Length: 100
Image 1 (tube, rainbow, N blue to C red):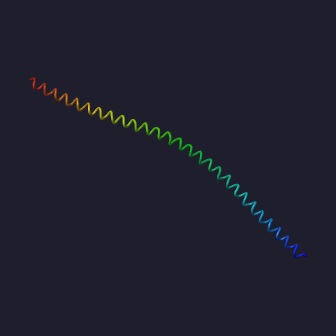
Image 2 (spheres, one colour; image 1 turned 180 degrees about the vertical axis):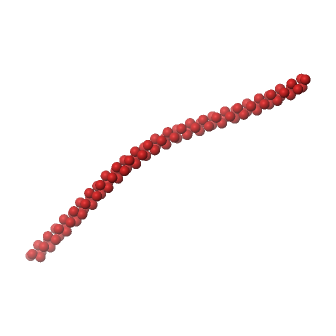
Image 3 (cartoon, helix red, strand yellow; image 1 turned 90 degrees about the vertical axis):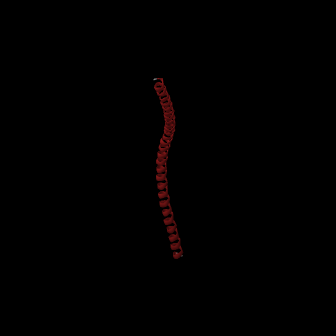
């Protein structure tokens, strides 16, 4: 009977040891989860900042694109006008020479 009693004590001690191992693992996993949640929060904050900058930069890019297009069109108009004036002045120059 003493042998059976010792076996029961050994089994109980073994179970208690396994239970303590599980408690340690649970505490470690809880700490890991807490750390990861904190890191996720920081990453989400960084992502929100990045999205804000991206939205602003995209808006500014559209404005730049529009300004570039408008400036290009204005330059084309100026070049066209300059060619017309050059042609007109050349024609006037020929008329002056013919009038002499």
